[in-house]
View: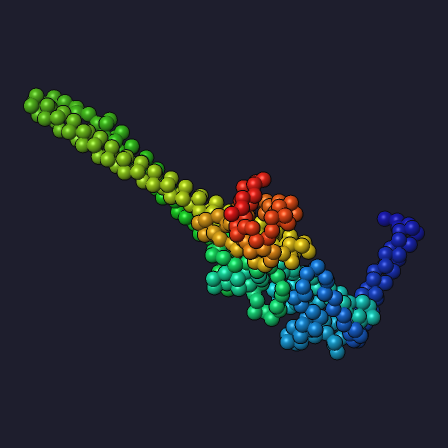
Length: 362
């Protein structure tokens, strides 16, 4: 095989590329082994709310884990571990760390934005705009709308994490119930097949008259077979009724499981709407100053209902169920401007916006 001059040139060029790449990689690796971290800068991204963390607190976390980068060589800094160490804290939603060639290390931290403080019987926790439940015990004290009332959350008093995740265990238990129901259904249907086959077998039986069989013996055998078939039919009907009742009970169990799952999904949806409602209040200068307290009832087997205690006047505003809470606040603001400003803020003790387009005062 003849090798052309062009092939040789291409081969040499590729060899040169490999050598350059290998040299560059070795050079960078050597540089990282010798280059110390020259600066370390932490940026806490503004989330538009009250700060949960600051750069000093992040540095404290890294120091506690003995992975603070200052004084180390670049090769000794594990950016992945540094990011995961910061991200494991509840107030942090996202972390990005990178180093420059000259040893400058930058860390950008996005923090969660708390929009409410949930203070109901046995519960005291912050709720973030992304639905994350934050413990108050982490040391930050925030001025936020306070949620009170006899509300019963899906999650426990010590729960930390996304509120929607609190439903996973409940839904998993319901799935196990449904799986058990289906297993028992299959067994009952198999049992039904068995008793049907057994009855068919008995029904096919007959009495064969032998050559030397007397009339009395033949009639006796026929009558005995009739009685056995009659007893088989009776037993079959009894067993079939029991199976039918069992299947009916399983249908009822499955319906209850379905209703329980619907309640869980509804509870998650209600809480998501409450979080969006509190976020709206936090973002609105008027309502953040006006709403003193959010009173929430329901939960568990009952749908969530919401009322607010305003700063103006001496009344409670009933907003009813969680549908269109923001729209109801808009209606309330118009009522403030058109009516209460004329009749006086002490004219009513109770204002209801439970029904769309209606303001009922007492």
